[in-house]
Length: 225
Ligand code: ADP
Image 1 (spheres, rainbow, N blue to C red):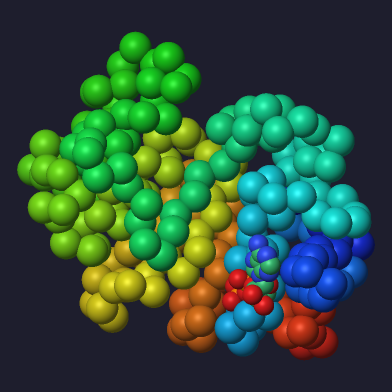
Image 2: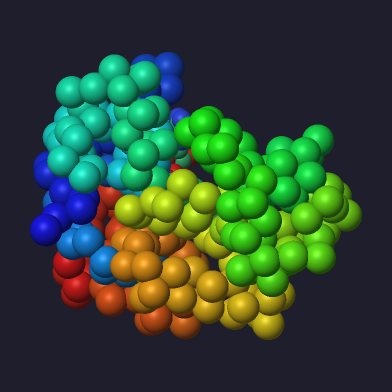
C-alpha cells in the first residue's frame, strides 16, 4: 500500500518579477514501512519537497496524497488534522519549546489528543529514548543529543504512520548522531513507521531502503525510486 504518493509535483516561488522553479515534475511513491532518504546539493529543493510531502506547504501543481488524503483538496485546518493523525517531524535544530520541560514538550501532542494518560505516556517515551532521569530538565539544560532525543519522543507520542526528519543529525557530533540514527531506525523496524529523511550524510542515506537524489528540482537518474 502506498502511504505517500507524489504525482507531477512542481513548486514555484515568485520573488518580485522573478519566478524560481524549485521542484519540476517530481514523481514517486512510498510504501508503508519503507525508509527513504532525499539527498542532493544545498538549494536543490530537498526541504521544500519534505514540506510538501508533510502537508506543511502546498504544491504549485500536481498532487500529494498521504495516507489516502490528497493535500491539495484540503483546507489548512483539514491538513493540520491529517498531520496530527499521521505524521511526526524531527528537525535539525530540534524545535523544542524552550519554556517547557522535556516532559511537557512530549506531553503537548498527547494533550492535544486529550489523552488522559499524557504524563505516564510521555514519561514512558522519554525513558525509552534514555532520558528517564532528565524529564524535568528544560531544553537549555540538555545537550544537543538529549534535545534531539526529546524531539524523537515527542514525534513518537503521536504514534505516527510516517516520520519526517530534516537533517536529524546535522547539529550533532558523529557518535551522538549515530545514537540518534539507531533510535530512528529502531522505530522504523520495530513499529513499521515509514521514514522519510533529508540528509547530506551519505552514510546515513545508505541505511535507508531507497535514495531519492534531487538536483535542479528534478529527481536524478540513478535514484532508486
Ligand atoms: P535544500 O533543502 O535542498 O537546501 P530548499 O528546499 O531549502 O533546498 O530550497 C530550494 C530553493 O528554494 C532555494 O533556492 C531557496 O532559496 C528557495 N526557497 C525556499 N523557500 C523559499 C521561499 N519561501 N520563497 C522563495 N524561495 C524559497
